[in-house]
Amino acid sequence: MTEATAPSAAVAEPDALDLETMRESARRLLGDDAELPTTEELETLTLLLRGHMMLLIPAVEDATRGLSEDSIPRACALACVGEARMRLGLEPGQTLPAGIAHAQRLSRSVNALCDHVVNLDGPHQ
Image (tube, rainbow, N blue to C red; front, side):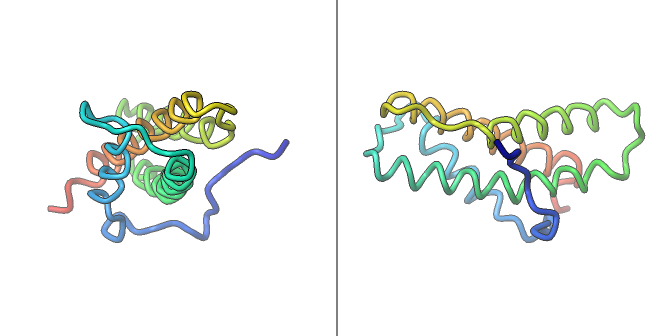
């Protein structure tokens, strides 16, 4: 089994990340008014969320490089990156509910990674 990691060549500048679109994709399954997707919609959304994570992970890692080793925000961000990488390595279950649960976990990671990009790089002030 291979470990899923974000390719370092795909590092996106924080200003180039469309965080609002990424958050909108994540809200698709997390909102109170979320509608159940079809199997095809779920597959597409899962791939989209994975792509967002692959862009966000290196951006968060880059943002932590200027922080001290004992920085709490650095530790939290890197823990989030570790969790996101772990989730990228997981496969969705065989049923629609299991696939939705998997995509919801990816959505939560996308939201958390977006938060770290904003908090560590500053909100593009």
